[in-house]
Amino acid sequence: MTNAATAAVHGEHDSNPWWTRAVVYQVYPRSFADSNGDGIGDLGGIRSKLDYLAELGVDAIWLSPVYPSPQHDNGYDIKDYQDIDPVFGSLAEFDALLTAAHSRGLKIIMDLVVNHTSDEHPWFVESRSSKDNPKRDWYWWRPTADASSAGAVGGPPNGWGSAFSGPAWTLDPITDEYYLHLFARQQPDLNWENPEVRRAVYTMMNWWLDRGVDGFRMDVINFIAKRAELVSGPQASLGGGSPMGPQIHDYLQEMHREVFAGRTGEHLTVGEMPGVTVEDARLFTDPARAEVDMIFQFEHVSLDQGQTKFHFLPRSLPALKASLGRWQGGLAETGWNSLYLNNHDQPRLVSRFGNDSEFRFESATLWALVLHLHRGTPYIYQGEEIGMTNVHFESITDYRDIESLNHYREAVAEFDRTGQFDQAPATVLEGVHTMGRDNARTPMQWDDSAHAGFTSGTPWIAANPNFAAVNVAADRAAKRSVFRFYQRLITLRHTLPTVALGDFTMLEPNHEALYAFTRTLGSETLLVVANAADAPLTTPLPADLSGAELLLGNYPAAEQTGTGEAPLRAWEARLYRLATRTANS
Ligand code: NOJ
Image (cartoon, rainbow, N blue to C red):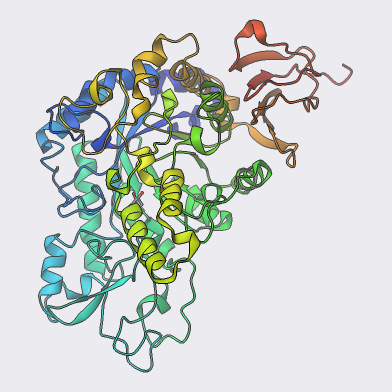
């Protein structure tokens, strides 16, 4: 259904932004579809799959970065913001993709990575060349620490660590000063305090919007504003926590004024923001403040992480419900949620929160139903719509992600030094199996031919060996299809204003297996009940189901019992429309 048609169905509610009733699909271009046999996915590959995405029914595609890049972090290290990396295609091919997407009613959202550039970006090449280069102040340069600063004398300015292991400061021999990089050393942080940097970014964003793109997913955008003590000595105690500084709201408001304010048309801005609270999020997404439409928060995907993300913890359904429920409540009156369990940085949801062997179909569809019935804009990550799973490569040499490889190298070196058990190679590899980002980055599984039909060449990372059983063709031919279930969820969001806009109420917050909630708009109440466990649910469902209409379930209709006392089966999820009660009924 096109946006205009969806808006028509929503009738009186269509004054709300288009993205309240939209579903976004994330493509990780490297791993989606390869059209030229070089083993790396590309724009031609994406174009060849647009009919597939249109059939799924999504409204917009978010493209992970396709700009020229040395690819140390798979494109999140950009060396030219206004071109396409030859490995993915060309600007002409990008325009062709955009036209082809728009002709199918699909919007294209670009990834905007402006917290940092690549160290090969001409801005940084200039900046590092001398202390008095005009671009010196476009990045964060600091001398080695002296006695008055937090860092060890003669070392980095302070002890801040990079997200990809090791210190966040690297000494550059050219000028003998340190530069800041919150991620890899090949990803130096831009200095947003410099107005020239901000202007250059806004010019670039306007260039893409003028070209026809429909918005931006903004990479770690809250980190563009740095806490003063992170970058300016002397620092008594730096502490840990988020690097985000309070200027962030000014920057985002300025960006909105300079880039979006004068534009007509339907755009989307979603800011990735690690470490923010629901109170922060209300400020970021309050339409009256004109900052961003929605954010990606991390609380619910951090609950199972220990001292590092690779030190994973047991999962708790009550904790997950408490977190997601709090975000639903916190943004109920003002602001808007994005909804995701998967993206290119997260393990596969069916392996993390479900049962990816015996109940793969059931648990994939359960989480789909639960997530898509929350209030917010749902994001589907490629392969999620066919229930793709985590991968367990036997050797660390099969992995490609800089974060996992750096962590493995550091941890195992530590083990060699101290013999500390949790750093033993097998334990570290288990952490990578369970939490590593390559779980999301193995090739999209299209069919059971070589390399899952992703490439005719040798893929840059091997396909998950389960591709013969788990693939698009098999899923779509199956009686129980995850793809068709997602199609129905998307249609529900397009057609039922209660799914898009209804108030959210969590039920049974402490139940260890039951995820249950209602959505209410006017006189309509929808009920979701989901048994997130391998064993049947035996406790009664938390609502009067007499006269209720079953709108969607993940077990065949003949097997649904539909009565109030009925237990739910393993990983069974149902969506009901409850009967409307009058005052005397
Ligand atoms: C967040 C992105 O999602 C991730 O993939 C990337 O490595 C970091 N930001 C750095 O750009």
